[in-house]
Length: 314
View (cartoon, rainbow, N blue to C red):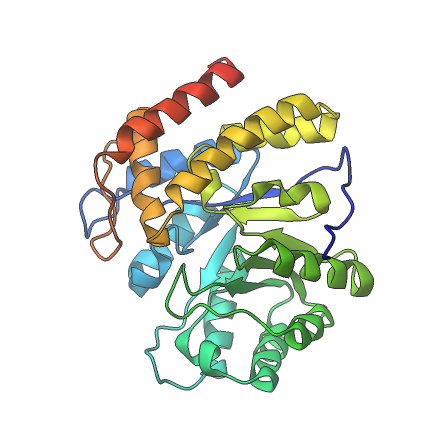
């Protein structure tokens, strides 16, 4: 029987939010809406992560990715941004391109996170470790990223050997793990605790957001729905108010279970509808290449929002 890692009461949880890129239509970002959503995320106390899959990073061209970086840097000096290699199925891993892109993102002021690519998904263990070593030769600090294929067709998970090798690269200061599997993540927690306790392991499991009680932080797409609610939940855990923590966690997990059902990437449309309902976005559309939800989702999202509002007294 596999046991969960120990629960760590009253720890300070560092939360990061993969920020939704609001869209004015299927092809045009709503830049004003993005500025407002970024500002709310920052004020709530979460670290914004931009050009992630939540922000349609794989779909954007270089100019729009650069504009997202510039806008975010104008609002905060503490943010994370995806590093993308625009390759196709069957392409080999282009480590030189990854290094160049990582340096560009670091030069913007962001902490780079290496977004999965088709070349990386097809690479062997030695090549994956070399990718991180080469980036670490040029960038002082960056994040690794394991992403399951349910989120993106290039998504891949590391072998245990690659994960442990990445832990040994000093400039890799953390890693986002998005397998949506508790046992896999428990294994990552135990390896981190054994090899490099100070390493920032960040859960991306939108179906098990309580994993933070076991000593991980988070970088979640789910938190873009309601950064304030996540911040309140985290503060309750640090204060030892477990009743409030679990009350908020249960509601947010209900939201995650609903929004992150198949097809998983359609959660972005649910996020847009949730934020639009709350009057925080002008539009509820998403990128034309992203799957959409039926309008029947809206009553459920409204109900969850009202329940969270009642707990937070807003």
